[in-house]
Length: 193
Image 1: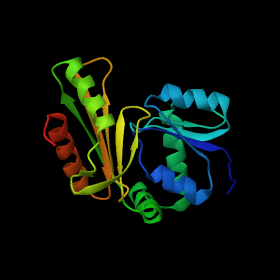
Image 2: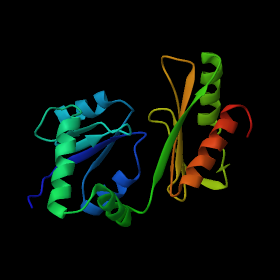
Image 3: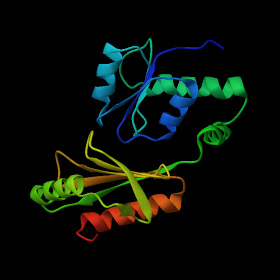
């Protein structure tokens, strides 16, 4: 088939599978704050092959610099027809290349913006070295506070700018680990360590 070139853009809350695939195929990876507007901006400024966010919005090179669900559905159908495999089988094969990753998000209601801001400041200045039995590897502050762990798991705390909500995103190598991360994140945000 024809090979296309260009970079890959993902938002701060998007799966590590993208990082692994970019490394595997030698593609430049950009990571932006959450919001497709940041991906759109890069699509206008750089040579971008594909850009996507955790909620499923994807933009493709040589088309509009915006999410297009119809185009993405057609590309997925083309991949299924070309490979003669159902989408579930394609996903299984993708996970064989990257390892298995699972993802979830929860919204915690915080009674005041002051509490939300105070929690975020404390977390960024003093993150836990050990979290739900995992060792902290790195802290990223691109958009919220993202705790990265040695086993490729991560949890992201990001306050909503419009409501008294703290969004907590997590990814890990099993559904159980994701549930454990989110539960530990909720405990941390409610004042437990």
